[in-house]
Length: 184
Image (cartoon, rainbow, N blue to C red; front, side, top):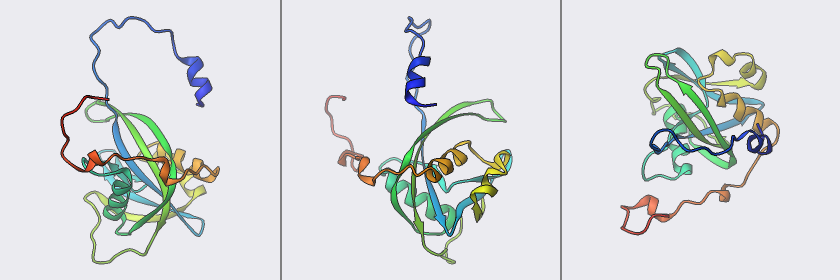
């Protein structure tokens, strides 16, 4: 849904019936990697079975999104990721099958390249293997995608969506203990 459609769909503001609770999405980073017309995905064990995902994971405290996507790609594929640009920011909502927990993810997606797999590294817990697939192979199995964002990111990339890495700014305070000052 584009921004204009989203703005039209926003209902008029009404007074909340319950006290306001601060909502915080889960921030993740993901890598979209193409080589010779194939895309690198990971196959991982989940509570819903064996699913496919981009190399991706949660952004850790004290790291920038670039550091996070490099780390996650290495942990899940045993390959060093070189980010070449920012693909976009994506949101999805998910309900856990086992617990019914309602979770929203905010994904920061990057595109780039990887080297060969390092045979001395083991893959992250739950990751069965890294696999190269064509766009058509990925499109053909949406029921095996861990997130609808796997296909969203692929389609954005294939449509030519690209942003420079300097679109992201990370303040130095992210890398050190916070000092006391007024909130922004």
